Amino acid sequence: MFKFLDKFKRKQLEKAKIHKEEKKSKVKEVSQEMRSKKPKKDAREMKNEPWSIIYGPLTTEKTTVLGLINQYVFSVARTASKVQVAKAIEELYGVNVKGVNMINVSGKKVAFGRTRGQQKDWKKAIVKLVKDEKIDIYEK
Image (tube, rainbow, N blue to C red; front, side, top):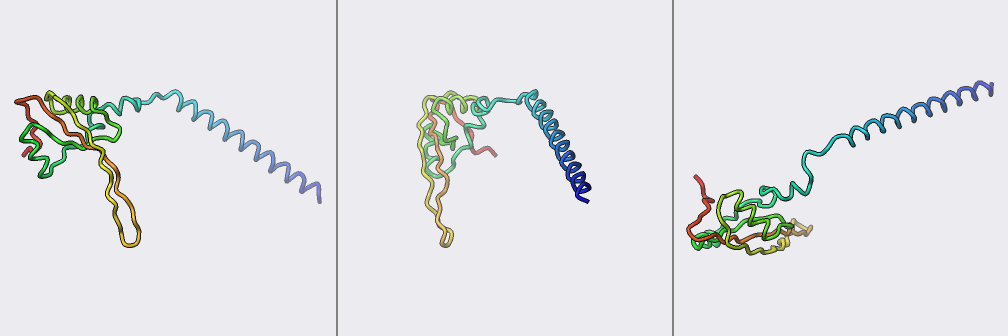
């Protein structure tokens, strides 16, 4: 009777070993396939795309007044630099940028009932354009 149990245990152990080996071989195949595939674009290249740097224009009463003196305000990525913003604006809107000022805006403190939190911090850029150039933000 004990011999029967020993045989049964041996068969189970053999099945488990075979199953482990099959899993290992499948994992190796999948990892080799993943290595052979090349990514479409590098993450560094994606960061330099103009649409990943500039989120959009800000339209408030103050920014419309700044538009009269050839300055436009945009919400930009937190990691963006002045040079990147200038290049992105020139590429997206086809205008010549004279200068860029950056402002880090801290998120507002908010409360939902008893829970307290904070909105995300963000960055805005004030872009000065060369004389006689305009960006049509309010397209109809």
